[in-house]
Image (tube, helix red, strand yellow):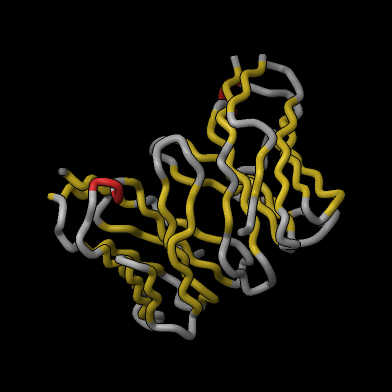
Length: 113
Length: 111
């Protein structure tokens, strides 16, 4: 079974802190994604990557950055956390240019106080 | 830009009913369409993936169809159970190399 794991299920951080959310997949997928999900707004794409050291902005990249040093690991970084970044963060991976089944991690519920 | 719409937004049915969830998309140039299930506070679980060359996929009590030319997909759930209660999302993968999601249908199956 494909596994996508995320470093934390729940996280509480203070305003202004630098926050790292880590995601690891074990199926050698090329593509990896970070989404946030908020009530009434659905899933919104923050960043994605289709290769090591490659990154592309999604729909809402402001306030975030990403790192992909190894194929299996994709990190989301909140440079200076703010309360409006309180959300559920979901990581996903999928193979190949034409896509394929996308697998999601369990999510990280981040609260910024 | 691709847009995905799901109707209805919410649905409540008695246990044992067969039901259909609808998904429509504006750009028919897709590689595949995927149906997901999400339980409250959890990640998304993939249910079915339909490639653009396929018409339908089946898994247990679930059957998904795809009519690419008309931009429509349906998810059929047979003999619904309370454990089927969840939000169901459809998403399409196109040339932008990312999934575009619908806003979901929240399903409640009453015992």
